Length: 355
Image (cartoon, rainbow, N blue to C red; front, side, top):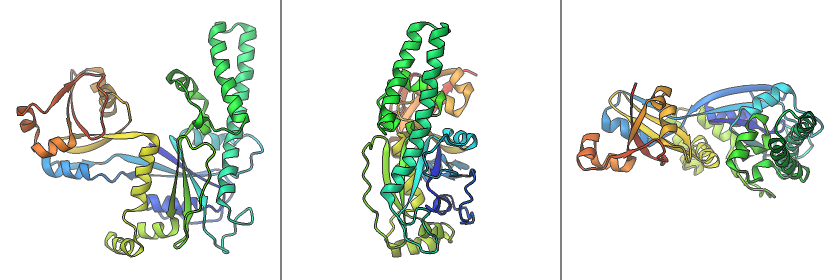
């Protein structure tokens, strides 16, 4: 799961990146260049720890999130995004839009004053323009294909109807994440890099004392709003864990900013976690909700998917209550599922396959 941190200059993206990853990147003034820094973060998961303790696993492997601090957006919807920036953004599964909501006279806002609602709208306009230009180019290409008879007319007509619908929405400043699409339509659009199709987490970057401002979302579909005391969380992330826990309690913070943002990101992307466990390793795996046992097998290893026979499945809570696989089997609590079984969050799997 890759999350791209985007935002206007001086919004505190790098501060938030350091807070979420424990990195210590310098908080330089924006250069205006296309730059990207990435870090892989382990997803805190007490269920991995519990399984490892119960089964004596020698290794604990957590699911991961990759954060990318992406510089280059300006909020000026005046033309096509640079190719390097466009390529980076298209690789992300979702965006975390860091919105400045803190005053700091030493770091002047590039637009003169702090206005979170304005900044949200400006960056959205930049993404909308990118998508509008992409859709217009595709419609022109489809027109040429129809004239040349390159593909069956009914195939071109279906694609034209879809892109005309997208064009109408974008022309009305409606992001494509707000448009309902069929599974076939969604698959068709995968290769076009439409940025407003991606889920969006608006992250209000506060100072140590500030309160989150209200943000109006005309199109809230597949969008979440959260807040973070960016500089405070960055300082805490770089402390000794015991000292950080003490200061969190002093500030009334019940969980780390990292844990909260990961949880919200899982909700935004509708991801679930399943587990495998044995003496060698207890491991968490992340999949989109609705994935099947065959998808889970493929996530573990392609050979498992190719030779899939069945999956032995038990919910995490049930396995922990019973204590081990042998007891669960003897009590008939292990279910045998085929490749079309839909994985549930917390399932513990044992994949049987011919290899």
